[in-house]
Length: 163
Image (cartoon, rainbow, N blue to C red; front, side, top):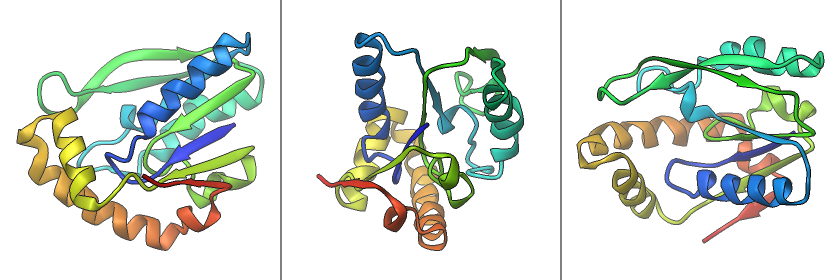
């Protein structure tokens, strides 16, 4: 299991997509799970038990994992489609808190992306999510700054990527 963690707008999803494509291109059964499919503005990291019980525990037992994706298409988070994750050779967890302390003993590797200054990351995230999300993204950045300081994610990373 590989975790790709770092602050919003740092490039985690882009890197995860490249890693998954590379592994799949080598014939490795790989699955990608993004924390963005669980998190909401009001629940940035406390959803973890749904990932644990729905995906990680079944995969550890050799069974497919299942979760319900958060749907943002209406502008507000709502229950979305059910996603099944077949047992992979490598699971890539991507997103804020994917490398949290609770997970580290289960990880083969933790990659941290710095992704530039907070302003640069905010601009990238706003470009991705829309200008109307800027206020919530600023609030999210304040939250994640505190989360990462307490969790010690960057310091625990096996590899740090800066831009």
